Amino acid sequence: MAAVKHDSKVARKAPRLDQFRRIVIKVGSSLLVDSARGRLKHAWLAALAEDIGNLHGAGADVIVVSSGAIALGRTVLGMPKGPLKLEESQAAAAVGQIALARSWAEALGHQGITTGQILVTLGDTEERRRYLNARATLGRLMDLRAVPVVNENDTVATTEIRYGDNDRLAARVATMAGADLLVLLSDIDGLYTAPPQNDPSAELIPVVPRITAEIESIAGGPASELSRGGMRTKIEAAKIATSAGTHMIIANGRVKNPLGAIAGGARCTWFLTPSNPVASRKKWIAGSLEPRGILHLDAGAVRAVRSGKSLLPAGVARIEGEFDRGDAVILRGPDGGELGRGLVAYDSTHALKIAGRSSRDIEGILGYAGRAEMVHRDDMALAAE
Image 1 (cartoon, helix red, strand yellow):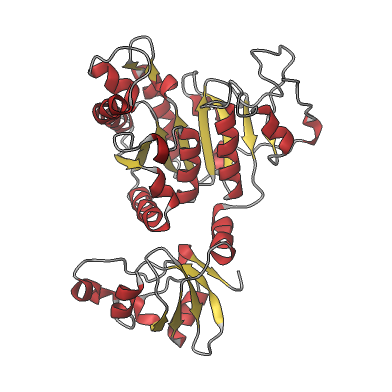
Image 2: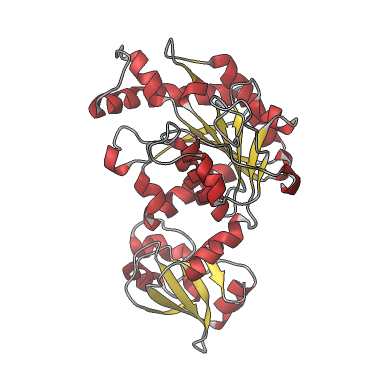
């Protein structure tokens, strides 16, 4: 591949790691597991846990997206090296997920951090109803100052319904959680103007202000050696992240304390976004989703929503349409004017039952303790915003 020209003089300045409030860190199998012995790299994990502890102690929310379950599980089960059949991979993942979660819990526990495991599938990040469930779980764990450790649920995922790489999964998790930074720890220290193993003159690109066709070409086409689990998936992850208002870094994870190294100015590539997660999410809700129903609000609810509060069932005077939980709905005031749009937390059948009622009554009416909000403020885009 011919080298791609890059003018470092026009590159924007990279941010600092300590500027971010919510950070997703992706860790690949090759960093976490010794491929020769199939064992966890305990010293490396302990050093990364120190880095996470420093960010967490400074007030940042941290989410880890970690590979390694299959690699650990196949060692425990004594499976031979080489490609695994689907059912073998699933069996290895079933065993390895326990070992992986325990390792993260122990490493972060030494930093005084509680760890929660979340296993997701493609549908959990693509279907709005399941997306809201996963998002709420992540949010609650972080509210409680726990660090969620996320992995694809390889015990049930098949070739047709899986991500297959944790780069794109990490980008989806970052957008779902409203993270403002995604860090992909890799075996290379960033994006180069050409594959450095093939071109000695290749230069590291420290900052990518915008992902252009030229930047995408560096990752290679479908037949490229980099097209599976390599730079191509990282560029795809960057497109997902930056379009949702999340900055992204590709950095060398083979060093000890890799996050500390980034903070200290180590070589890496920053992918910048002109937006932020909240603005991008509200733009998506306002303009990209087809509304399935209408919620008519009373005057008190209109004032509350305009002041930045969530919409409670008590403020809903009337409901139109049939919709499922997670669908977009239009919010209208007493005069019929559109206030905005939001993702509703109940399907239309249940919403009709609790409309106009106190949130305290939800469990008695529906038979289960649902969400207090009909539309959470984070899932709402007002017309004036």
